Structures are given as C-alpha cells and as structure tokens.
Image (cartoon, rainbow, N blue to C red; front, top):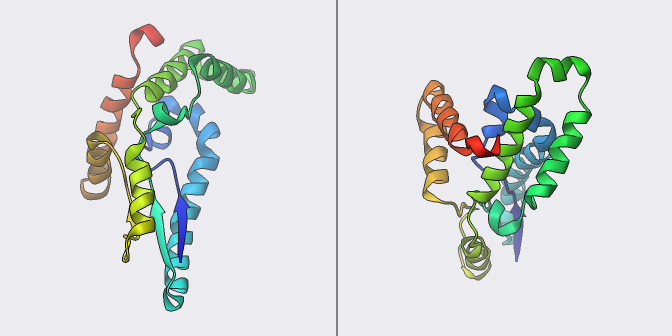
Length: 178
C-alpha cells in the first residue's frame, strides 16, 4: 500500500526572497503553507505507517507551469494581478507604483512560459513510486536549472543564493512584458 503527497512549488522561492515581487506573496501564501505542511506530513506519516508496511512518497515537481497551465493564459494573469493590485490600499499603491504592477505581470507570464511543457517526468515519478517495491521517500522531477537552484539554496551561503535569485528573476522580467 502506498500513500502519496504532492507539492507543486518546490525550490522556486522567487516569491519569498525578492523584495520587488512582494505582491506575489499574497497569491502564493497558501501554496507555501501547503508545501510546508506536505513536508511535515510526509515525515510524520512515513514514520507512522512504516510498521504497517505502507510506503509514503512525496513528489515535488519543479516548474511545470507551462505544461499544467498553472498561471493559465496571459489574459488570466493580467486579470489576477489587476485584481490583487486593486485590493491594495492607496498607500501601498503609492509605495510600489504602477511600474511594479507591470513587472509582476511580466514575471508571472515569463515564469509560465519558461516552464516545462512535457509533464512526463512527473507522471514517471508517480509511476515509479507506485510500481517499485522500495520507492524513494521523495521524488523531485525538475529541470537542470531548478535542480541547480535547489542545490545552491541548500549548500551555499544565503547571500550567494539571494544574488542568484535576483539574476534569475531579472531574466524572467523581459522588457516587452513590463
């Protein structure tokens, strides 16, 4: 018997570390809470179910937003960001400015576009976890870039990681989308 827990946002914490993307925290807070919860739940459930022969696996895919339409289409991104922007107080709007709203729209659109279209690695991870006699506790199907960011975030100093995320975020903010 197997129990699966799936979390979507692994190792792509642009939303929490870059100050100019602060508005995205409101739209991602539930995703991050579910990510933290699923990791904790995996740890506890895996240990509790082991005596009964139940295998528990966590599948954490990288950026497959393009294949799953996580941020839907560009029109939906515009609508969602405009809705978040209109919900801000006038004081916050003045602090961030209209340019900030355009940057967030551009970032979200490019994040979706740069995501993997082929979701087969995720499906293969589920299949392997189901069919293996001794499945891994954690499967992380992701692109090499996402894997690199994950390794940097866990093994190098935080200042280096913050700098890397700043560069990657700027690459996602193309001028024509701002």
